[in-house]
Length: 108
Image 1 (cartoon, rainbow, N blue to C red):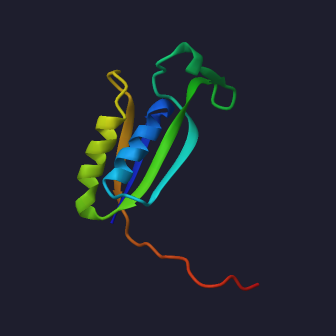
Image 2: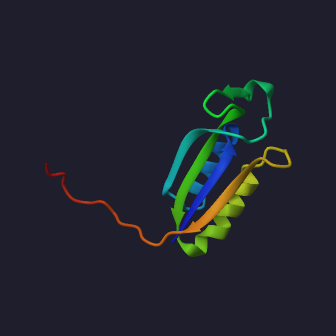
């Protein structure tokens, strides 16, 4: 099993999610994060006092997939996530050593 994490410009995330769902991937999470991607529009720029840097709000996409799906999903994310810039984001793939499904009733 593989875990794929991608940092993508927020205006591209809806198309990326639609494309990977179209490829059969359903185990997807998306979170807005402050990041250091190169801004596309001056209005994206914000200054973070916490890290004393210019940041933009970008999307972090996280998903789990079978080993044989990883290359295809990375290709889809990279293709659909493009913005026209030379660096529009980054995709990481790591091995998942163990996954446990949480089931059963909640007992207090």
